[in-house]
Amino acid sequence: MPKLNELHEKYSKDGLVILAIHSDPDAEKGKTAVKETGMKYPVAIENGEFMKTLGCDSFPDYVLIDRTGKIRVVDLANGDIERASKILLDEK
Image 1: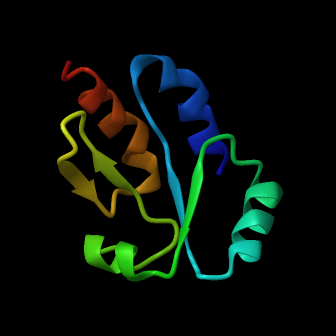
Image 2: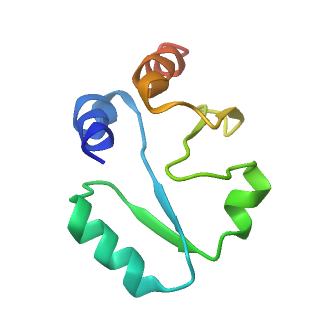
């Protein structure tokens, strides 16, 4: 997840919050994934139901939520995440 680490470092001061969601009830797998990928942002662990509710069906899948808590984008392509994040950050 180097791109997300980069976005976290670049835009967190502007209000971007990155939260990874590990969709597996096995917390140890989540901890291992965090160590192996070097994630520098928070990681939540859930059993997969939350991500299904959002319509996420692949890994990794990205969901953008605006400052008001409204879900704006689901299933965003990796290459578009920075552009979409900038658009939302500009909506102050």
